[in-house]
Image (cartoon, rainbow, N blue to C red):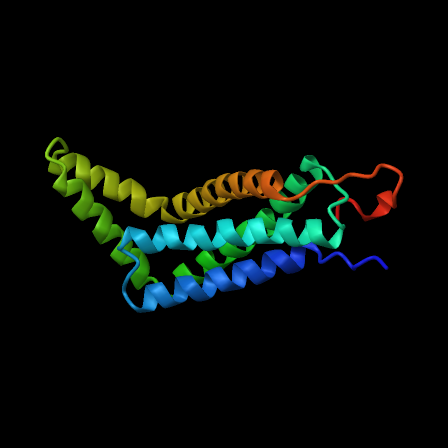
Length: 174
């Protein structure tokens, strides 16, 4: 009896909701300026995608190839990326003080560098303030898709493969 394949959308929403819960916890505890927590969020994403691919392989009785596993993982990461972008837009709209905190951290970081004049810092801050949401969305899009591709490659590489070409082909690609 063949197992039902869990859809990429369901897996993406589960991973995304875990990441949103983590992000909210870090933000409201005031830990967002600590970069280790940002990387920990990407770790959740990476592990979630790898586990999603592993589960997919198990549901197929490992009757698939690298490309199918990679495609499944990348679809899951695309769902997570969309969910995280929607979350970031809503979060920054509802809590604009976090934008101000991010801007202050950026200013401190630029002022710590001795080779940047105050005029250059002000110009950079003006541009950042004007295009903050564009930078936020673009950064999230590139970052999550890049990490999603890496996670999908890892997951596809480590998941067992035992393709049997004459078995039910309709199960591949979900």
